[in-house]
Image (cartoon, rainbow over all chains, first blue to last red; front, top):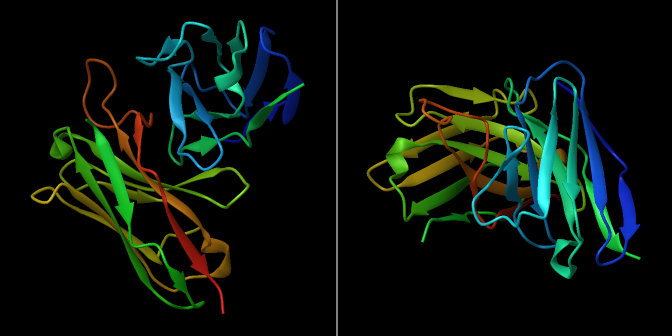
Length: 106
Length: 125
């Protein structure tokens, strides 16, 4: 299953609302997860099952979607949110990731 | 606290072998599927292999099948990846990750909730 993220990068300011899109090459129901990765660090799980917030993740992060179209939204971008975000399908192995969206400071 | 720590990354020549280890702590290691995921520096994430909690169920990506072997020792809370016939394209940071069961269920979920810090494998002459 191919995962396509857009955009590949974006520039935004603190306080902005940011939306990242992920599309699957076939229906994956809600088996979609989002990770945040900062430079030199391991990825961190943010959202699983399309919209369930992982514990200790701020409520400014939210996910939606089902089937083939999914979105990650950050309602008010904070300085610690500048990172690369990856979607990943957990519908069927081999588990596959999107190529990432780098969120940079404008 | 819940933690995974990888070790074993190194510089190795093409055709060589390497064994990675991942030590788990702060949770009941034997209850969880475990996974290896790799990342070429500056690029995206690629799932490599998973192993069931008791070691009886294993799967690999096509890119490593036949060359890599995943295993675990639950008495030592440890996960391993034996990498043989290494190629330049295997150069990456290798992460181990925990794969919890689905809510109310058993087995794997394909969701990676805890990651190690990674260990760098470089395949080069």
